[in-house]
Image (cartoon, rainbow, N blue to C red; front, side):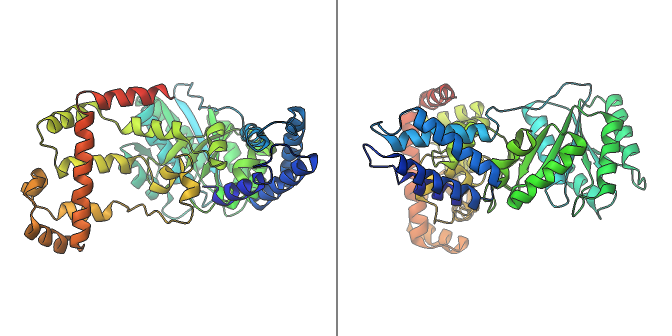
Length: 442
């Protein structure tokens, strides 16, 4: 996420680092590189120019020329300005209304249907809402079927009227259906087009007028850069939407949309999509995103994800097993599953301060645990429950069954033993104390 931008900004700050006292020329040179980095990231030219102008004014106003550590002060000023550029504050959903109606808009291919499912899953699990998904894309082949597959996957009802080609009528009927069936959130997936056209804009405008949604969200593919911002402006002129959703931020995005969209349309980014899974949705926090762009990580979000997967009842069971030396590979597998639910590995590593930069050239596969899982699944139930029983002949069989080597099996056994010892040391409430400390970091 934003790797190229992060790298170029870091190079820009090197002009100042190591100088006890610098000149105005050094500041100008640094900001020239910052502006170039923003433009390379496909940030709007006017936005980039105004951004560097504000940074310069703040830098000179805070005596950056005489400070003992001008490089660090400049990073802080840029971080604060990046935060403001992306909205300043976190803006949540307006969940008023009975039911709350959320209208999804955007171009075809932006990930609108998938994100409708992610948002439904988020509201169902995080906000304990009764959600209804509505298929109003009557043009794209199999669009409603795709929404129904998503609905089945997350356990959310999908409202559709097969054969009805009037999306305004379908949306209106869906809201009535929600009221009659105790649904307190309705998410309407509308049709997209390959480009903005008058017919599409008139149709979504008619839907908007008919249902009067509490939230109108514009879904945009973050990888389209400045084109995304231009499209957002066109949609906003017609719909006056409430917020933006950036999808595919886990891809090779330059960051232009995230950095420009607020300043151009004056609407907040509310959510981001960070992967293919239904759980790959995050509330957009401008300050945390600024930290990540500048290579400072995002510890708070990492802690929040860990807390979401932390099961106190399961933790108590594991503590009892550790106390009795009964912690086995089946328990180890459960720990791996919890980590996998936190998100893709590259995204998680990027949240650790300094780790993203250190591992920028290393390809972190989402299937990083696949080899470990294969080895464990090649063990018998007895071996998984009794790791000490795994001798050299059993290791050979396990290696052969999992397509791995004896060395890889030995390495896993070593890692497992180290983890068991560490958990043994934490046994007796240490794990809960650690989670309490993590909560205090929020």
